[in-house]
Image 1 (spheres, rainbow, N blue to C red):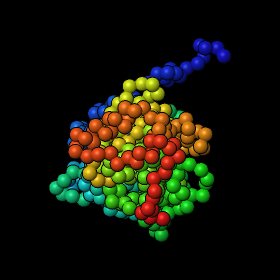
Image 2 (image 1 turned 60 degrees about the vertical axis):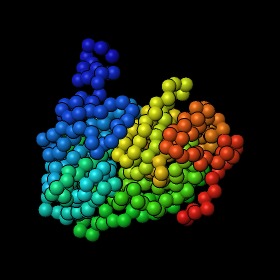
Image 3 (image 1 turned 90 degrees about the horizontal axis):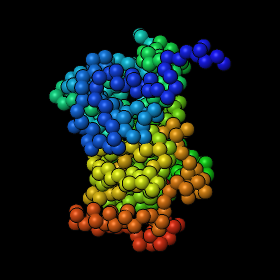
Image 4 (image 1 turned 180 degrees about the horizontal axis):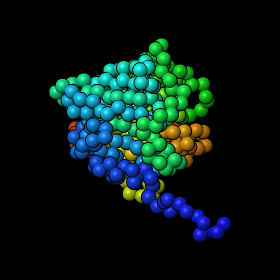
Length: 375
Ligand SMILES: [Fe+2]
């Protein structure tokens, strides 16, 4: 090929189109590994969307996933939008309504949401999000895979208010925001809990109690694995008790973790690298970078919950078979003694003691007893 004939708008290796688009909006962009409290982080007005906003561009999200905080003033609504990609919305605080429709004059569906609800906005549907309170703002965390999509189709306008409708045409009978449905997952082998919940709307995740034992990651934890109809993106929430910590593990990029309830910290580290401690409480967000080990610790007085948004299947990483798991997860007897010592020291500062079972540090195959297993 004659090089002189090759013309591209952006030279390979140059800035991603998504990054350029994000910077063009002119609202704050938060970088690093974590943000302590998304409820109080500073935002700026985004006229086109009629909301205060900021982007998260944490290490491990770049080029993969988008997360942005949006705040609707009291008694107001965001501009109506239509996105060509599906989007998850987690409610950091406030209460409101969302209406979706596929064509002007066609059926509309409206649902109510509250603090710590999670909902999925299907691609190609128009939507408008309203703050139901006349006194308090409503703050939302939006999550999608626009960075990947814009690498494939580097035309930002393609993704916003594109008239393409796909097959997502709403009819009067559609109950697209009905209660999530429990689906048995009969694939064999770890990781997993044998059950998915599928739906576009999950109510208050700080109180969701339809959980299943998630034995593989230790600490007697429970989880809900969520799927969204006709979407490849997933999410899950893990719940585990005070005085315990999960096993270190690693996987692909792009997951964004936000805390619905609890207090503790997570440690992130690249193999052989410095350990980074991210303390968390309600509304903390953090991202484990691709192939970095990470481990979650509950130092609070109550159960801790962390909600992981994503991934797409291609970013799940390995860990689907026992052989892979040995490379992706650190069993308690194999961990750096610093992990246990630091946890015990952190608990001691709070007048608490570790409730980790001594046997778990001796036996790689130790499994917590699930005496109160709900299923
Ligand atoms: Fe993880």
